[in-house]
Image (cartoon, rainbow, N blue to C red):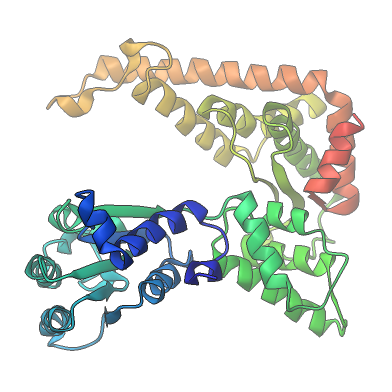
Amino acid sequence: MNNFEKIIGYDSIKKELMQFCDMIKNKEIYAELGAKLPCGVLLYGKPGLGKSLMAKCFIEECKLKSFTVRKRKSKNFVEYITKTFNKAKENAPSIVFLDDMDKYANEDDDHSDAKEYVAVQAGIDSIKGFDVFVIATVNDIRKLPGSLKRAGRFDKCIEFYQPFYEDSLKIIEYYLENKNTSDINVEDVAKMLCFGSCAELESVLNEAAIIAGYKKKHKIEMEDIVESVLKAEYAAPQDYSETPPDKLKKVAYHEAGHLIMSEILSPESVGLASIRKGNLGKLGGFVRRYKELPSSRHHAVVCLAGKAATEIVYGSCADGCETDINKAGECIRELISERGYLGLGTVDVSALYENPSMILDSKIEIAISVEMERCLFEAKEIIAKNRETLDKIASALLEKETLLASDIKKLMQSA
């Protein structure tokens, strides 16, 4: 068993780092081929994804002496960085681990040339030829100066993505191993929590255990995990008993519109749908997908599907759709003004000129409005053809409040 097996998922990243480990352990083989070990590797991505753990596993697997630099409150932090690189040279072959390097200087975009980063650059330059490898982690790679990210300093930059469904499934199974559970559908849980960081997944499952304990249960049940997801991920309290039934029904049809459109354009893509009162007493609901939609235009159609469904059922202009309309507009704007969806005549090239064209702006706005009308018409057409399924989903939401992936699959198959 190698040290990387401690980490669940991220197989492509582990494979790449294992190659570097092998180069460190078997230098002669690679030297014969003329292959050079990269000067350093930079792991970047959102917090809680396991970057530091991956770096530690890399160090353990290499079996070299390591020297770690973390931000500390000290007037001599720059000197500390320099001394660490000097110690690494004195103890070569060795590894320097720069943890959370984007926190070394003031945490804003105007300090990419800070003296802390200059010290890191100088340290990396000073170890060339001394058999010292550098591995670093950052949350926001944009805060680093370009000179630090270039080849010759960090030859390899590896991005950590939030776990996709397959990795989420493995991570959740691992976290549930040491918990007392009863009839947990792990696939449903993974689809609910897909794209959450490892830390978020662990936190939600721990919250489910707390909820079960407070209810004096001996085992965690599916309802506890659902409650935890709604509480932690969406800040959605349980109680909405004072909500008038007619308003709740409109919300159900609105969310059913989003759900049915997602399932038609990307089958078995929805992991969770729920209706209930949100923060500050606002009535609402949400639909969460665990698969991406085929295109930005599909996304725009899904965004407008809630409005379309409500207007088909109630025969009047739907209210409370401002966020959906704005999201749809952003998708269409990107397609038209950046990607030339309707031809190059509406591509926004104003950044190339000092005085942006008002005529072009006007053309783009008209094109966006026309395309959004088309998307809304398309959404209404699809929903009208699937009216029976829409009614079934809305009724199920009113009855169950929350639908999981397995519930949705049955509803779509019975349509």
